[in-house]
Length: 344
Image 1 (tube, helix red, strand yellow):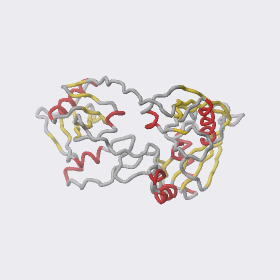
Image 2 (image 1 turned 135 degrees about the horizontal axis):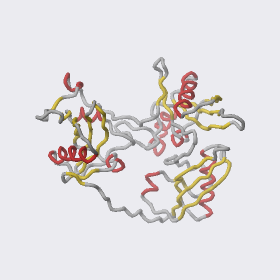
Image 3 (image 1 turned 135 degrees about the vertical axis):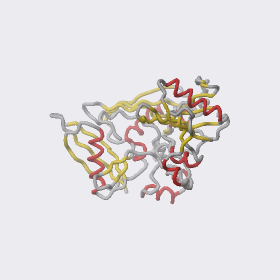
């Protein structure tokens, strides 16, 4: 979802070699594997993402860089076309990034993984426990005890939900040599969009930017998917005997495991009549061509209000996806004008 303040983190905008400039834009994964030799910024009036990418490419050329990675884009609150763009620069022979030693906590002999590490690894099991845990340490120790009993090397607590005075906690377990998960591109083009179908038909690097069947979301685990895959049950620690119970879904029958893991998670607007539409982030929208643009004006307090109004208008225009391209603040008064690109 867009931010009213429009402080953007540009992560993985596609590299499209249409410019005459030598310096090329890296995505987050590429940049994280290399050592930067310098940080620079450019300031100016940029009306589109392409404008400031081109400006940064020119600036990187002057510094003798072969590539750059845009880290942050700050937009002036008084004029949304004025931006300061920051980037790391890289030489053609940039050395590999030095891996920092991990400093992981251990509970019951099992390492607690951060999300950044866990999300890229394939779990071998999932543990879900229900009980009273007065502190974070109690939760970690309870999960770690179950993880240790299953021979896990590491665990990651993904979710917790309140059930009265009790908590239900879900954690993923990993072997020491856990295989890498097949992750969707961070800003994948929806495969059911016109842009997605065109990119798949083109093949090569273009097709690699599209959501891939059999790949996982880059931002979240799917608890239902893994619970079904491992025929998982909730371990109830509220009773003295710690009885293992089935979830309501498992009590009836164990459904077949889905063959296609989840798509990229996007902010979704749902209308009262049930119609839905998803919002694209800046980097994904930059890879696609809009079939129309709409604008509307009004006073909105939250991001949700803006996104709802944008999504509603996009649905009425027959769009599958939308992207809030620009928000202009009135010079006098609290109203704003919102520009929305529409995609099929």
